[in-house]
Amino acid sequence: MAARRDHHLAGTPGHQVHRTQRPTEAGMMTALSHDSTLRELTTDQGVLRYHEAGNGPPLLMLHGSGPGVTGWRNFRHNLGTFAEHFRCLVLEFPGFGVSDPAGDHPMATAASSVTRFLDGLGLGQVDIIGNSMGGIVGTRFALAHPDRVRRLVTIGGIGRSMYSPSPGEGIRLLTEFTDEPTREGLVRWLNSMVYDRSLVTEELIEERWNHATDPETLASARRMYGSKAFAAGAAAAAASDEAPYWAMLHRLRAKTLLTWGRDDRVSPVDMSIVPMRTIPDAELHVFPDCGHWVMIEQKAAWESAVLAFLTRKDAA
Image 1 (tube, rainbow, N blue to C red):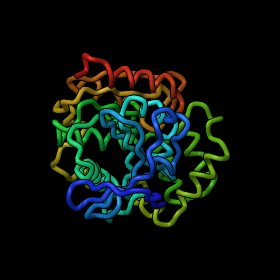
Image 2: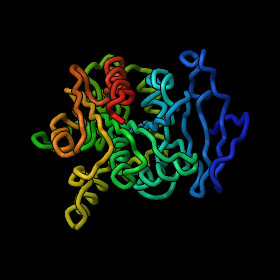
Image 3: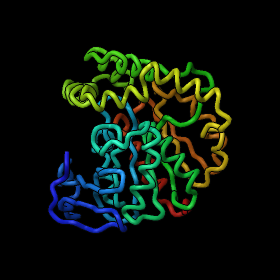
Image 4: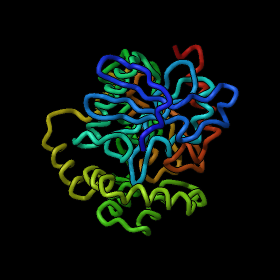
């Protein structure tokens, strides 16, 4: 999945950036494709792949987790809209079959890859949009580096269940698929992600199945969502003296927009209560008739709300 290398640009020392030809502004909405936006950043821990489109302030877009996920699949339908206002950078986390694996737990390498990525591109402060796991990664990065995140947008995922069972239905179905991958299990999990099941097309199923059953990708998924991994993670958390990230949200300094699907079965909407009440400068926007993939299922409404938040003058 390497990018076509039309020309080479130097990053910061020790890093190399390979870019495909960038589409013109006039053709932005029609020219954006997987291949035309794909880039590579060579780092001391392997190649990070990403998609880039648009000009303007940098906007880092971080994908979620699950069978067959990639940054491109999470945000490909939103990229054109945001590229009219921002330099969009859709990072592919290590451990999901696109960027080079980094050898550690995918959540741990996701967090460190954000720093490697921004440093490699020579970027200081950015805005971040994070979907589900990407929202947690973005939040952790903003807590650790308060001067590097101007505004943060999360899509479900962050917080702690207050009333709903934990883990949620979608996470339980994800674990079942990860333990025993079948096409039927994948379809059950995909259906848990959305309110409108017509979005789960045969094309989507085939695309996700082919990627999710790749041996390396599946092995990585089991390190995150397999039943053994869940049990080990719960035991480690119970024995740890370190506070969970959601207990530190009162220290978050970035202006934050929490976006949520009212009908989310992966991270139920009651998870939003803790971040909404504890992040000092947080707003919550809940979208009706919408599951976990808010940026897909309520595309136009979500893009409008997020653009208003990111571009309004009083958010500086």
